[in-house]
Length: 487
Ligand code: G3H
Image: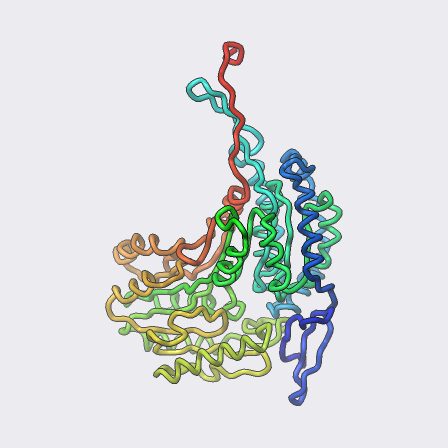
């Protein structure tokens, strides 16, 4: 109960730790340890993945789909047996509340099961014959090669597995680097990786991305880069590959999702959706609402109700019952939140909720900042934390213009009770982002829905079904129809 702040993994020591502030001093508590690898380990991991793939001739890429499914089921069974340990590590390492850590785990197991079911039904998976103009084609789904997989710290297990599982089950081999925070939780899975899959199919490297990733990409031996993380990092990484255009990339990147709240919106509903839409897991979700654009005629009412509901959210430690706001994973994040709020205040905005922007260790109290305008950091930058920027608008064109001119294009929410108004907005918006949410917050799930983005927000599409396609290619075997084959 005394724990106050998180430091995340400490550089150059063999442990992930959490710290607490006691009378101003920091005490470190070791959660566990893992070896920090270097380029030699990365080289070894890559060589193992390349050998296991063996240019498509390896045991794994040539296995039948049924055999690969069997391996995955075996893995899932072992993973389920480790639920409590992994849930606790998610909670400790990234400060996610216990129920949300449990949800993350359970959603991941459901995702594995759904992936297996989807693969059984996937058109052309095993073999499908088409006869067109005298040519018989057997169409197959075949793997792409060696995948470098890197997930994010906010969903270290779930979003990593949203790419790792479909990539594996389609017959690819893998070098996997766990995220910066959320590292230890993979340790209980290493044995399951080893026993469920053939040697070299999945190779985990712990270590600093900046140290080990360049070597992997510069080798030219990685066929697919999959990253859920920052757009800037993705651009940087892609350039490291010697043949940039031949590196397939499946990416989930930055987003600055807006909610547009129209004058006839149901304010209670909008407040409820935008509150958790902005602040669940402290706003550390790529799909979080990162700016609320509210019609000037209702903005005062909206802000008052929003602040009232926000005051009811419990702030505390992730294991506290009913908690919503928990500590951020490192002190640097708190400094960034402070900088953004100070910048907005210096440029004419204010924090409208009591204790908004206060902090203690890595706990940062959510701040509702109003009125946000162009030129402030909060206007365009993705805060990825507990700040709710609110911008008023008078003409809907202004709100649309914000979305159109954004460099991001993941999702948007609109709140209005008038179907005609909604109808007029949906078409222009759906050509700007990959998902328009009507009278509800932005989100990734349910996981069968396509998850992607336009502009610099994504490359490729994820979802239970889409990811199987993203990590494979449709190949075929063709032959001319003969009199014999006609019979
Ligand atoms: O951080 C990005 C995730 O894709 C968000 O997923 O909407 O299910 O929380 P979620």
